[in-house]
Length: 583
Image (cartoon, rainbow, N blue to C red; front, side):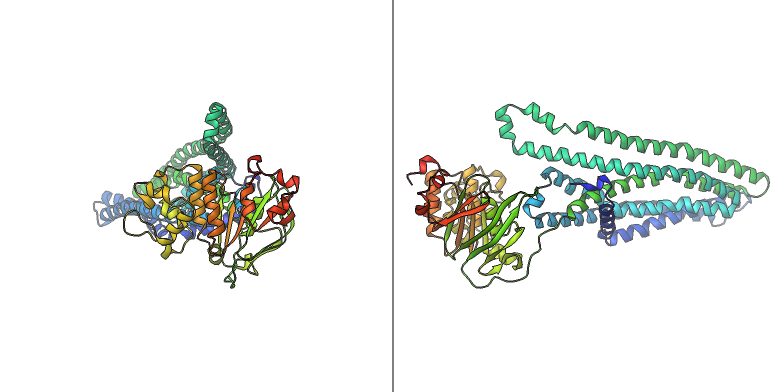
């Protein structure tokens, strides 16, 4: 899943290309940071020579304007330091927000089975953690380049003061450069592995939290904790190795830098005795030696760049996944006629889930989809409304191929309700009106009321009584609403009822009691508003109420006929609960 840590060169190139794009995401703040940081570096390079001139002037019995110039440079350094923090903070925040928005849009554009290859916790880690690391690349790149100016400028200045001093500095900095190159190469791989294991732990944690009730009922919390934290030793190993690499690089820098300064001072002192340097020039040389040897900022910036690069590569892995390609065509006139032509869908391992399915659902009809577990019912429901594209064949709604329709037109025409719905929005009103146009989903200003389309959908789904008993009614925050499984299903069904032409129910009434299921069944059958209905079900009563039953077996359409005609087949009857055989 995450090939970049295995050294896949094409993917590494795409990750590096993403880094360049993220640098541009910082916008004007990155440009401002470069200008401010460059000004600070220039002032830093000018300060030693101005200070040296001030010393020579003082020894000569005068002062001139050199001390004042040194004070001005100190003021500039203070101001640029503050401005650098401001620009880097804003630029990083803007780049991170833009990258997160891009990743989130891409995730929502992925087919469910493609996104399902990534554990939820791992995706959250990439969105929250690795996006923040990658978002720093603009700041780190600018500050890294600017941090190189003092060493380079120091070499130039020392060469101008006395060539021997410059050559001494070059020799010392060459050793440090080799050390840092080794650090970058080793740290890149370690950081990538660390982030990969972090994502693994996050994915396991989200899985465990989703099954918290099952874990509590089985009294296996201790085993689940061990399972979630099983990769922790590996994570600790990568973490220790990362800090060890950083510590070794810092130690080399700390060891070489003072020696380099001493060498420059010794050579400068000798040059002073020979009259090659003035006392002021020696002071400037010592200052330039300190600037050139102070590579701690460069090391810190390299560490940030390593983390940014590793984070960008992990995000690029997801962005490389092909998203859905929406068409631009509007819906043609029609009443919701659905047709599947030679539809074949394969599992990721190549196993066929649906095989050459031909199905015609007349406009306004209700077709129940039945079959044993694993026969492909939910997959058929997914391709019928283009939650998933078939690997072969075509799906048409009122004669228009689904892949040619615009996203807005398709989602306006097709509504889904699921066995385990995920409710989205701040309030119950938002959750029900999620698929409605903005003008129809707007919350009325008067207290607990709902907009007419939302109220009608709630009534049809038999959830209006539950909502109206709550103190805040339709304005109840979702987080505060006490929802049973059946109430959540009814809210999900109410949301789906905003569809104009095709309503797809994927076992959407399985958690309802018999009376409520009967009431909703009547709403689906009798108050469909002319919509076509495709209903995945295990209930014989629902199949009996349908105009036709599509019977799937091993991914193939075994029969398409009314329920009463199929009931004579023992294999058909065996799919329903015995208590419903007297439908």
